[in-house]
Image 1 (cartoon, rainbow, N blue to C red):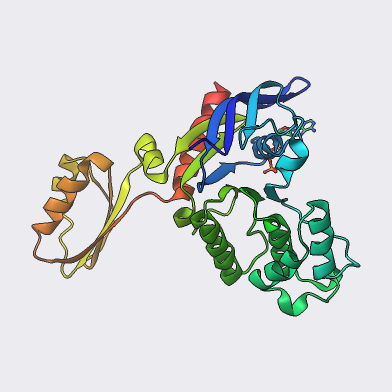
Image 2 (image 1 turned 135 degrees about the vertical axis):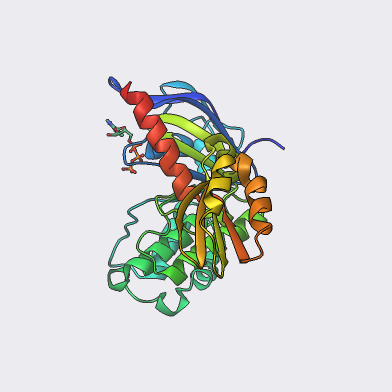
Length: 308
Ligand SMILES: Nc1ncnc2c1ncn2[C@@H]1O[C@H](COP(=O)(O)OP(=O)(O)OP(=O)(O)O)[C@@H](O)[C@H]1O
C-alpha cells in the first residue's frame, strides 16, 4: 500500500534560516505519527508543507500520491483534516453554524455536522454561540471541523491543549478509533505523558533537523537509556549493591523495604536473576524509559551536537 504522506529530502528555508533541514519521512495508512520538538523546531513548517500551505525549498512532498500544491490541490484538501494549535471561529455563530460553514467550504453534506457534534460531545451546545464556549468546547468543535468529510489524513496540532484529563482521554480515544478505520494521523504534541499507547511512530525534530524516528521501542534501543527497577520486600540488604555494581547496575536509593536501581538494557536479565535469588524480595517492577525521557534525551543530544 502506498504511503499517505511521503517527504523526500524535503526542506524549507526562510531567507537564510533553514527552518527545516532536508528530511525523508513517510506516514502509512492507519498510522499515527507523533511529531515532537521544542518551540521553533520546525513542526509547523513541516505540517504546513504537508497541508500544501508552504512549498518546500528543496525536495518533494506527496500527500495521497499528489503534490499538495499541485493542480489537484483543492480536491486533495477535502480529504485532509487539520486542527490548528490556536483554533478560532466566528464567535457570533453557534456550533452547528460553524460546522455548516466549514462543510460548505469542503463541499460536504451538512448533515455530517450534526453527527460530528454528537460524536465530540457538543450536541447539547450546538445552538449556543461559540463565544460562550469554554476552551475545551472550542477544542472539541475544532476537532469536529477537522473530521468533516472523513479525511484520510488528519493533522492535529496540540489537540489536547486546554483539555481536562477526561477530555484528553476522549481525544486519544477518538484518534484510536480513526486509526482503526485506516485514517492516518500526524499528532503534534508537547503533552507527552499518556500519549504512548496512541502513537505508532515518533519523529523528533530539533532546530530544524530530524533527530530520530521509529516506534517507541526502536527509540529506546537507539537511546540506550537505563531501565528503572524497583524491588520491594522486608529487611532488604543494601549489600546487594556490590553484586549489582559488578553487572553495571546502579543502586539509586534503598531502605529496608525498597531498592531502586538503574540498569543498562543489556544488564536487565542479569539484574532480575540476581534479585530473584533474594528470598527477602517479594515484588519487582521494571520500567522502561517513557516517551518524555526519550524525547529529553534526543533533544539534549541534538542541541549539544548543534553547539559544537
Ligand atoms: N514565515 C516565516 N518567516 C520566517 N521565519 C519563519 C516563518 N515561519 C517559521 N519561521 C521560523 O522557522 C523556525 C521553525 O518554526 P516553526 O513554526 O516550524 O516551529 P514549531 O516547531 O512549530 O514551533 P512551536 O512549537 O513554537 O509552534 C522558527 O525559527 C521560526 O521563527
